[in-house]
Image (cartoon, rainbow, N blue to C red; front, top):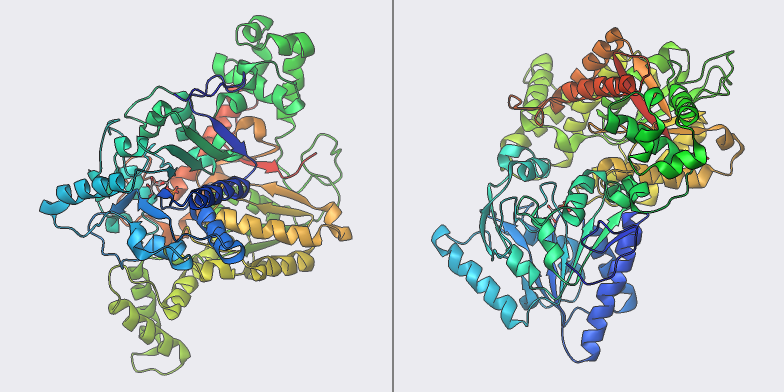
Length: 637
Ligand code: F6R
């Protein structure tokens, strides 16, 4: 464990951890630090030895280093790099090889001499792997050891590809990838079946020999593994927890990835706190869950025994506080997500006026919206609001090839194989391209167009199931997604410009959006940043003052109970209709039979989530509903 003296709030943390508002600010600071080290070494006539990682996490850092090279003359001429890992069995030219990733994301854009770049070689023969790994270790040693190691962290708690079960003194070697890790990579490889089963990775022991280590983690999906590594015991089950044994390791995390740390999740357990309304609500809901008692049955002793005595001194007695919080939660529940016309709205999440609202619903990827808020969407339509549903990206990166076969065959059969016409021509071209495509080849523009059309068809069917007319649907196909690959998206002004135009046209009273706490390189998070830029442009226009932004959560997550500002109950029939809507996204169904909940289909996950929220509300002592969809208001005061 590092010798740094930790503050009272950080008393549970065994690794110094800095929380940043977002990944950008963390990357800004880290890029400055790396540049400073490179320059300091250069001033001393030496070169820096850097340990590097791939994946989405370090992309922001690499972009900044490239910019500093171009604009500030930062030279990498004396930098030597060693990457953590490489998939075994992949050729360097493979689109998903870490070699290629590093070339595209960093090396091609800086002045590092090629001979200074080192990655394990995923193509060495099986019988030569051990010698290759030993050689890799020797090269690190003869470079003088790693001065600075950059790490990300996997959902399994892996660093490099040291999966659960790794030992603290492991060296560079061939490893088998965890099933969760392979699932995480499935999108990049266009299907789990294509993800390699093995990799060569530096060992935990190799990593721990670096003089300085920084691990970055962004997005809420990393929160639980971050807290395990930082606050848990050191264990091979969470290989990143071994970093507790290193004396100069830091974690840099954004707020979403920090959300499970004790000082953030249960701040009252690490010292005295200011009892803001949010914190009061959070602590009472937590206590109710902890005691498995409805809010109104909590008593003073329950608070006292759970380090919440201060809260009761300031805001008690328990019954008064309970009633207050119970009412707050009660007021989040509404069957009128667009506001209830002619009703007193002083305790409702939405305003009654105007009765007929302009509602803009944004779906970053085509199936996000139905999964997260299909029931609410239907209600908004039924309750007479002017709803526009905009699909922000085409989603064409996620369509399996066999579906394209099906679609092109259909077009050709309908027109006759020899039929002319532009659609038959396109279908023939695409079919030819799919047939001659190698296993990991990137799709041609024509094939991407065809795949986008498949998703459009599914999206229309899903939206119609939620009660929308075709005229209420827009497809924006934002360019960042069309030009990009997963994990490597880059926003350009044109993305936000398209959203600005849409906002100005619709002048919404309500926007439904997602992506604020997602992995910053995901489609949802990049789309959300484009929305924020667009809002930045229109926020001084008069109509904007009347707009509420409601955040939903995509990808099988709900808001934590204390963060919910609007809870929309669904009847059994509404739940069934929502499932039917999600089901329309046929290209997103798993291609192999599901195994266990982790592999559950998206409609099953959505159903489970919405029912669990209803059960949780019931547990707090509120009415028992069939299912509930949840929203948080953005920038609420
Ligand atoms: C990559 C590596 C991995 C990743 C980890 C997180 O070289 O060693 O440990 O750092 O899987 O991946 P992302 O950043 O894609 O979430």
